[in-house]
Length: 225
Image (cartoon, rainbow, N blue to C red; front, side):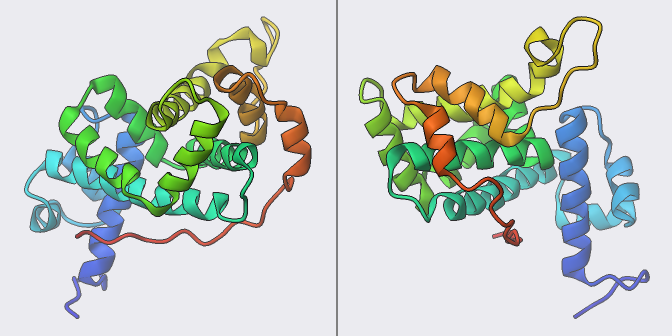
């Protein structure tokens, strides 16, 4: 396999570019980071980026799709042990919140929604709704709230928790005025948000049935198709 002067293989260079770009896009949006900044963070030359991606837009789309693919696989693993609809929803919501607190994929998704980027939304929606875990989660959401479609419940859940986490530090319910806001855990966010989305369920009781700290699983790196 060919290597660059810095010793990186082609696959390593591409992975480093995507990782660096995903972080910068997630933290600063699409327009702010430059390709030169991304190349510096990835420790590759600017022409190397154009070797893999035709332009900044192409790189951005790939970052969004690849990040969502990786997180979708993690969500599937999170709900796999459960059969009860409420437990599935709790595991799904908690995992989604953990991703938003610790990773970049859901931050990118939140920005896509805010930008109303229909091209990327279609690509992401195809990944999300064709995923193996989505059917199981959708069935659970349909049982918990039959008055709306499972797809709509999933869209609301993903959007709601992304907005809740992004904006929560600006609101007093995480702390008193004049005090440093408390940083909630993924589990705490799930307990705050799920009663709003599915008010008929006793989520405190569901929480007591769930493992407090499931062991983290190794995330799967998804390569470009």
